[in-house]
Length: 259
Figure: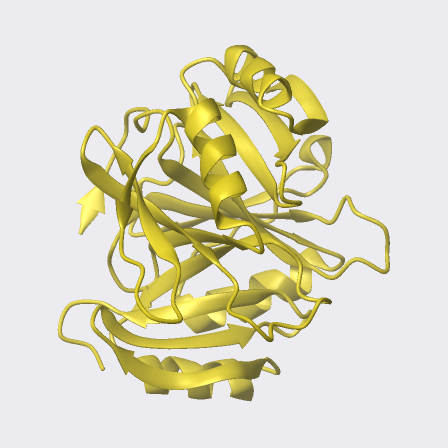
């Protein structure tokens, strides 16, 4: 378990939030699945709601800003010491700013970028809200990773913007590396395998810990979600990919002694 109340090191995936059409419905789904306490957010934030577990902030649930035809999705935010400087690096590296740096009340400063392989990501400079206060335990954010069709191009972009070094984990038919910040693994980056449908976009994905992957998968289905990749064992825990009842995909992975 990791708890934190200070800013995360630059480049660390520090927050995730969900953009949905129906925040109330999302609150019901995720509070039931993970036991999060999710008070409805105020009108001045568009109803943006911060979930917490044992008093620690975990994720955000907010209104979907994309067109109606774009499905609900989780967004990963990468920590920045200076959002404006990071935003400048995004454009210098060939990316695009979807949302220019802006203050979010007194909580922090954010921007949203589009990388050179088509993936969207957030930039977060924490102030009063430094990001997730809990990680690597059941019902908390545990891992973030990025997949695209151009592994080297994606690595070059994120390395230029966030200064990552990479820990190569690739093997036969599998192209993947860990993101290293000061020698510590903070996330992953990979290439979609051959045969991946063209309709699958380049994207960041989130993993939430669970003490029992099979039980969590069953709970997702019972709550109106669906399974897109059945639970299977991996060297890092038992993993499944699911979607909530508004179509937003996320991963479940066992932590501790869970199965």
